[in-house]
Image (cartoon, rainbow over all chains, first blue to last red; front, side, top):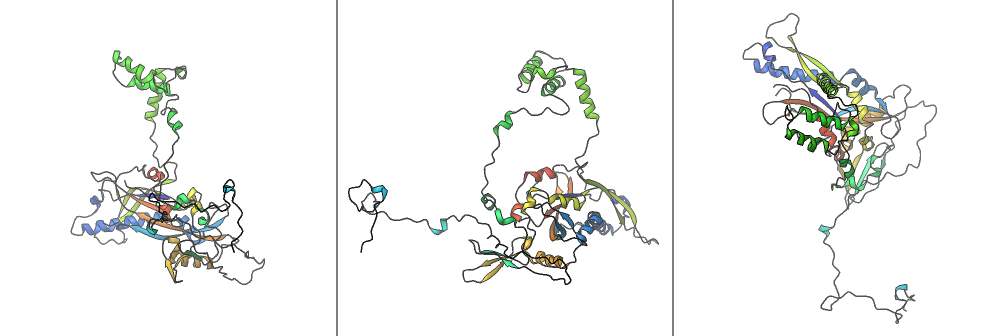
Length: 88
Length: 355
């Protein structure tokens, strides 16, 4: 594993298990349905991660004095998101 | 008119009052040339940005405020050796670049000094044993031959009794039966996953699978996927703000400008906190209404998410799908430094999906 970067946080996502094939009706649309399911999974993961607590912090900030002892109100903002297509 | 010269103390014992200037001569007796290193070999030591100008007029806060004024206290720093300056829209209350040690500016790695004494000391006894000697005896007992032979006794002396961590004093009240029980009990204990107690949440995800049939309820087939391990974002952010690297966070965006010798100015884009996106978001945030009763400084904490499925093994398809989070307020030169803590973070990946 080539991990050179030090992340501040790490989240692990489940992947579609093989048993998904049991619930998908066989047919010509099977590949499209799988793609749809993978996309849905990613959406649900982000739905869980961006929880109410985060949304509240996004709107109203949160106070921390961790930098130099001076309390400041921090507002999280997402600047970059790089990912491979989850449906692939 | 010859200027009056005082004899320098070095030539006090010289008979002549005017010593000739010392000229280095070559072997051929010619005056030596003054050699200069070509400019391309000149090593320019790295230099941090120029410091912020001193705050001469402290911003005064009127006790009764009727008009909301968005006062911008824009400022420019001086140029550093490379002609780079910083331009802030708002005066920063904190400058992480004010004191960067020279080691952090250059790429040369200091040799890692480990104390030798650390290795000389005996390691703590392996869990669940209380002393190293008990562990050594027990290890000898359960390994090797079932019936201890001459070779086994040799092994006892060589590997246990002469071990530097072995001390007979530790074996006070030793009972092989009790230590065996301790070992058995430890093995039957529920294995703790690294995700217990570290703020990790295990969640199931429900997705709806299209069935291809018209459903009066409008929803497809519910399918549950287990195995998402995640942490609450806000505690992760709060933890990031108290870590050692937090002292290097740039809380205030700025424009990095390179001034050419011809006084032309070129904007440099090098970090997230020198980007227009960050600057614009900061302007928006400063205009935003303060939280009721809160007069604290408002600061943007930039987040950068990165996700890629990662193969765990070079064969088979054991994969995990992590999402990493980086703080954009930290310079990429610090963020991208190899850090031992990284492998520590990633080493405890528990679940391996089959796809």
